[in-house]
Amino acid sequence: MKQQMNISQFADRWFKYLSIVPFLILLVGLSVYPLLRLVNLSFAKVGVEGGKQVSQWIGLTNYTDAIKDKIFHLAFLNTIKYAVISVSLELLFSFSLALLVNKIRRGNTFYRTVFLLPFLIPPIVNGTMWRLLYDGQFGFINMVFRTLGIEPQNWLSSPGPAFNAVLVTSLWQWVGYTFLLFSAGLQMIPDSVLEAAEIDGARGLYRIRRIILPMLKDTLLVILTFRTINAFKVFDLFYVITGGGPGNSTEILNTYIQKLFMTERRIGYGSALSVICIVIIGIAAFLLRRMVYAQDREEP
Image 1 (cartoon, rainbow, N blue to C red):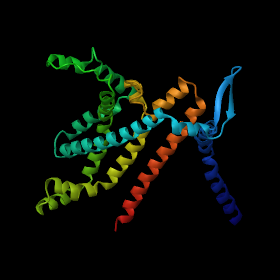
Image 2 (image 1 turned 180 degrees about the vertical axis):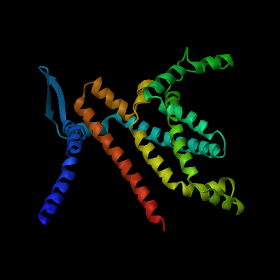
Image 3 (image 1 turned 30 degrees about the vertical axis):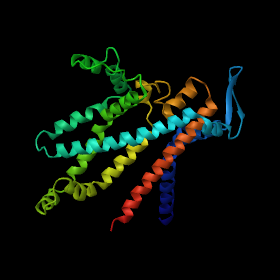
Image 4 (image 1 turned 90 degrees about the vertical axis):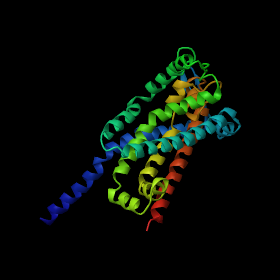
């Protein structure tokens, strides 16, 4: 009897290990191997000879070239700029919307649904729709300007307006999603706490700063972490709306890497920049993770 139990325990243990083997195979095949292959290509000069891909080991040359690449520097700064501005504005607008809708006792489900709709639209469709709205000749925005007697603008032909156009589109796409998370967090705050705070005289900005924001700390950190990492990975909106133009004024890391791979066929250099981009995202995720744990350790 005891031997049968040992055999059964042994079988159960091995079944647990074997059940995750398919997942490990997929993980290695779809994630680990391509990443290792990317790192290997980043140290090589890749070309095509006789219809076959050939690579020549050149060490750190691709990485040193990145240090001297002015377009890469511009793309890096634009990526940082987009991440900081877009995430900050999204947090501000979505939190404000959540506070307003939370005060509405009837029909707030309707508002949540309406604000979430832009997020449900695929990013490529969102970008295409807004590119048509920004069109200098036939765009709806300039049609409204002409009706009001205002001079039409070339939104996508100047560096500043083009970058701001992508920011507006990003806000349109993401504010509804972060609003929904903030709204769910506000509903988790007990009414008794807010009523007690109001009786004690905590109102307006003081109540938001001292009562609501501390109780939404976990929600805020989740949104901040997710949106910051996602902002560093943005590609579709810039690709569809500006294509990195005019010139390279709205170039970001992902659109520049795409051009290196698909247009210039600089596979080795593009791989090196991809590795750098992955490292940047990893550092951002690590710092945000440390921020979360630091906040948890400060709690009594």
